[in-house]
Length: 406
Image (cartoon, rainbow, N blue to C red):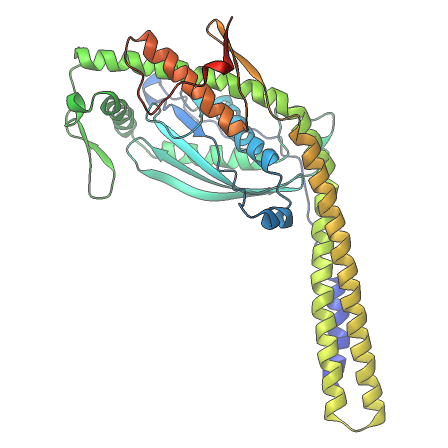
C-alpha cells in the first residue's frame, strides 16, 4: 500500500513539474578595448563557414527537425553576423567571412551548429591564430525572446545576440593578455606560412612546427626580398578574392534574411510547444509505468480484496497515463511536422542564382556549398591568370557552360 501511495504522490509531481524561463532581447553591444589598438596591434580575422551538423540519416533529421537547406543557410548566416559584430567593436583588423580556413589571415574562427530553431540556439566555436595555437574552444547557447522578432527590432540585432557578443568578448579578453611582440609574431607567421604555400623552396626554412605542432619563426626574410614582394602581391590578390567572396556572402545574407527571420518567427511558438509536449509525454510515460508497477506489486503482495482493488486502480491509472503520453507524443509529432513545413517553405527562397564577376555573368547551381565551391574556382582561375601563373590543378575552373561574357 505504501508503494501505491508513493506512486500517487509522485505522479502529479511528474505531470506538474516545470520551470519559468526569463527571456530578454539583448541589445547591448560587445565590449570595446579600453585603449584603442594601434595599426600594428590589429589582427586580421577570418571566420570560416560553420559546420552545419546535418545528420546523414533521414530519420534522425526528422527527429531533430533539421531542414538541411535552412541549416546550411544558417552555417553562412552565423559567420556573417559574427563578422559584423566583430567589426563593430574596432578591436580587430579586417574581418572577413571565408569558405574555409585560410593561411591569408592572422586569426581563424571555426564553428559548428549544435542545434538551432526560432526558440533556442547552441554553437561550438574555436579561435586559432596563425601559429596554430588555439586560443579557446567553447560552447555558446541562448534562448530567444518572442519580442526579438518584433517589427521594431533592427536587423543589426539578432534573436541570439548574446552568443555573438560573448564570443566577441572572449576573443578580446584573450588578445588583451598578449604583448605587442606576440601579436607581431602572429602576423609574421601568417605571412610566412602563406609564402610557403606558394614557394615552399624559398621559404621552407623561415618557419617550422615544434613538437606541439605550433609554428615558430626560425628566421625572417629581408623586407626587400623580391620573392617576398611577389608573395605579398599574390596575398593581396587572395584578399581581393576573399573580399569578392565576402560581397557574395553579403548578398546572400540580404536575400536569405527575410525568409530566415520569418521562419524563426513562425517556428518560435511551435518549437516551444513541441519541446513542452515531448517533456509531458516523457513524464506521463514514466508516471504511467511506475503506477502500473506499483499496482501490480500491491496485488501480488496482499490477498486483501481492498488492496487488490487499489492495485487495479493503479494499473488502470498507469495505462491511462501511458495512453495520454501517446496522445501527447502524437501532438508533438504534429508540431514537428509544422516546423518541417515552415522550413520547407523557407528553403525555396534561400538559394541565390547569379553573380557578376569581372565582365562575366556566372550562374551558380546546386546547393549553397556547391555554389561557393564554384565561385571559389572561378575567382581562383581569374587571379592566377591575371598573375600569368599556371592555374593549380587543385582549383579546376567551373564548367564553361555556366559562364557567359558580360
